[in-house]
Every structure is written in structure tokens, then in C-alpha cells.
Length: 196
Image 1 (spheres, rainbow, N blue to C red):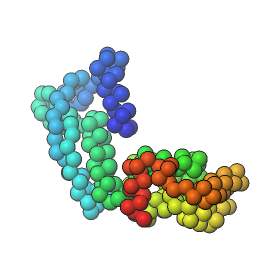
Image 2: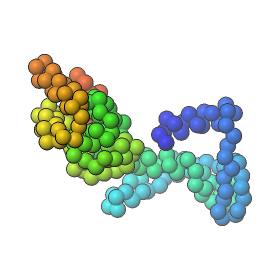
Image 3: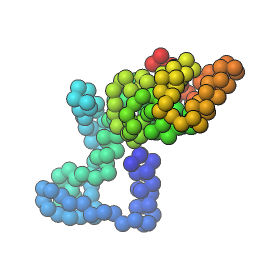
């Protein structure tokens, strides 16, 4: 669930469209609908070698004060993953999706174009962390030469329709001498150019 989706759920709760789910405290055994939220600082060890510290809300039992697992934990974890990607120079899930959609490919077809496993792009767009090589492959197709290279190397993994559409895109970009700055928003473009 994205931060945007979590905010929508909270709005529904505030409007009374949804009832709060009861929380179970593992320490005192109390099931309560109300919880206490406090801002905390938490450190995550990502990929076994990088510690990322983030701040955010956490849920606590109103009776004994023990930490209760809820949606706040997922939001904190996602903040840590986003910060990890920034520190490593990796693309964020929405940037990967934007690049893939520029080519008009499904996650599976974009994975095939890059010679990655079937579900790699799907997983990355949902927030899974991968290797630097995977992110570099995605960044590299922002240049016309690399896109053509991947297309030629993996032509048999795509449909004729997809190959023709990508070739036309390459041809039109080459003829018009377009740059990706005209296509990609600045956040993604600046991250792509820094990696090249």
C-alpha cells in the first residue's frame, strides 16, 4: 500500500465510512479499537549492510503502552526503503513505472526487453529492492543507443507488434534528435543523468 492509499484509508476512517479495526496487544492481551500514536525514530537494516533511520508514527497499546503492529509500521518501512533507494542512486517504483509506460510495455515485456526475470519489473514497481545492475539496466534504456541494443539482443522475447512500435519510437527519436528531457519529468531525468 502506498502512502497515498494509506492517507485515503485514514480519510475514510475520519469521515466514518470505515470502522477502525481492533488491535490486539500481545503484552497485556487487550483488544481495543483505539490506539495511541506517537512519533518515533526507527532504524532499519536494509539488505544486511545499510542502516537507514526514519521518523514517523507508531501505534501503542493505550493500556500498557506496548508497541502494536499496524499500518504505521508499513509506512515507516516504506520510508526507509525510499531513503535507501535515494542513498544508492536507485530509481523509485513510480519512476520505473513511468519509464516502462513510455515504451508502452507491460512489466513482463519490459523485463523481457531488459533480459530480466519475468516478475522483476513488477516487483520493483511494488517496492522490492534489487541489485544495482538491475537499476542500471533500467536507467540505461533512457539512451537511444542502449534501447536499440537491448531491442536487438532480446528481439525474440517480444511480440512483432512491440518490436515494431519500439523501432518506430527509436526511429522518430533519432530523426527528430529528441532528448529524454522532453519526455521524462525532471526528478527521473536528473536521477537518470546522474547515473550515466
